[in-house]
Image (cartoon, rainbow, N blue to C red; front, side, top):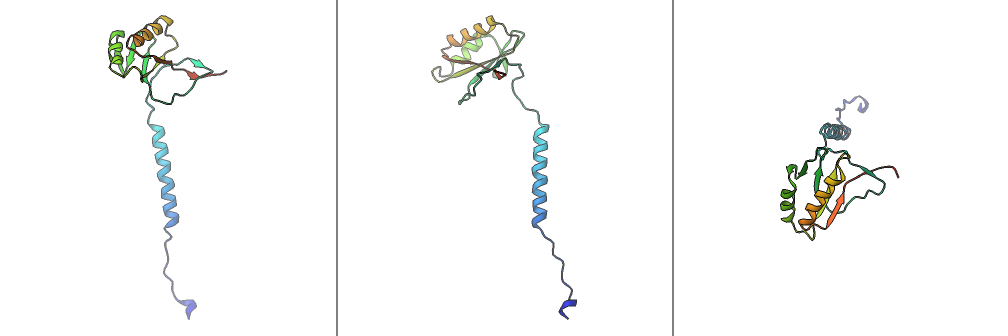
Length: 131
């Protein structure tokens, strides 16, 4: 008579947890792809010797129209010099991120403003390109 006893059905929960975890990860990945990446919208020049810096430096952006941006605000060269002078010049790194159309004179003018503020560690942002 044991063979004819009715057994209660069991719901396995472990496979359901696996599926729910997979769906959660899938939706998180899709959501992250839908959020646009924020950053500086410039077309950097390329270099075969591009390196990643270990510390987060201050970024000065030179736009193609001749404007200079620092901390997401348009500044003049004297304002840039004053704001950079507020930092500790011996430990401050400044990266100049310029568009391809920036002239050498504009780059040198910003470098001079950084030097007058006491900044000695300057770099130029580039994209990795073909060797």
